[in-house]
Length: 159
Image (cartoon, rainbow, N blue to C red):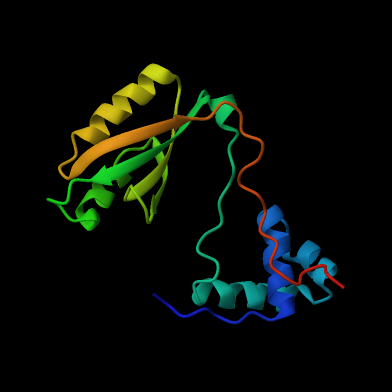
């Protein structure tokens, strides 16, 4: 694991601005953070090179594309297969949007989106068929209050 990269306040302000809308022009960000467009471009380039910025992406409204059913699924390994062998198999399932290795009773927590409950049931069958998966426990989301919040680094906009 790479050590934390220290960011100055200006880098943090640039990241905060871009996390709200990564399509913003560097000129727009530059006027917000008090730099030239070229300076913002260079700082973003360096943050990409250092791995601070992994990628630029878009956010899709799941309801508008028919993915109205969300569940969090806790997955327990049976101990016969190492967790590192289970995770790549879970990555192959397009409905698994996030996968977290966790401490406690379960080994993984997956965020799954499907079109409806029956589709979730099919995904659960696929997960349970993966060698090394002992059991799953699902929590169905009734309503999402918020998700995919823009990043706001500590110290940005304070004081």
